[in-house]
Length: 328
Image 1 (tube, rainbow, N blue to C red):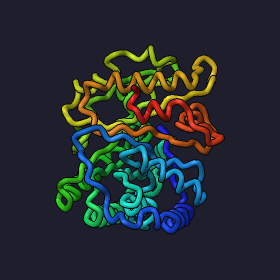
Image 2 (cartoon, rainbow, N blue to C red):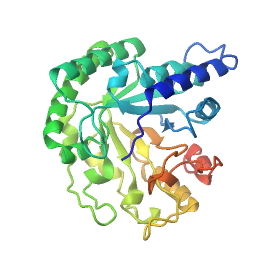
Image 3 (cartoon, one colour):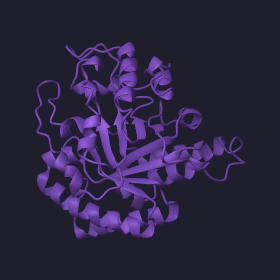
Image 4 (cartoon, rainbow, N blue to C red):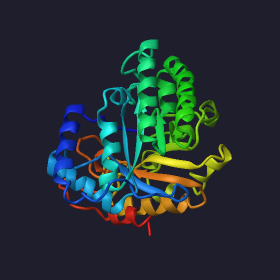
């Protein structure tokens, strides 16, 4: 639903600081510890309090102590330019997390392309992706965030993307067969729910079968569709099993904690309630990955600005412990 693209120069600077300041602490680590992919991997996306050195090191420390995965999503061109996604893969061994990379070529809010999906740019995307997976052999690699929303906003470009995605999928599997390749759908929109009781949508589960993938990945923000966690139907998540037998990933999960917007007021207690509800309602799914979108939120914009597991002043919310304990 929402994704912050990292500023490449800033991230490069931060990574250098993080590596230098943490060298002594992690000097004996040379590779990530083995992780099983048959159980649930929990994590957050790249969402520090700030990109200043100390704040970023603190963020990575919290990831190391409590999370299994760290998800980066951004412009596909950053693979070619060897910027943020490369750095996060290289930091994984120091901070003991599994990196998940999602690349995109369009602006989620508008559906406009970052750059034309012409032959030259497709070749750049393809070549940089193959080089990346050859070198890092990632366990998970995603292309496209909320592709069903993209389809609605830019249908012609979406059709081009489907063809290209499937080409890249095959190329990735040929050089790194164990990498699980996927695209990401917005679950509530796919179900045909009405956002804020205003913005209508039609269900489109058949879109899953248009993409070659190893897992079915979704974002989920039910607080934009239901006023309270108790309003979420019991089959909200298990309905997925009617449309795919693939393992499930939730690459963005969120519920706001602010007493706004009007009519959709929430609270920190309600945010905790949602986390428990989420794990309750997904207990029957073959769920591999669950990523809470924000550890910290550093920008304004309802309702996402209060979806962090930490408050804007840097203090921890009850949701932090709830998330780390799996809602128990």
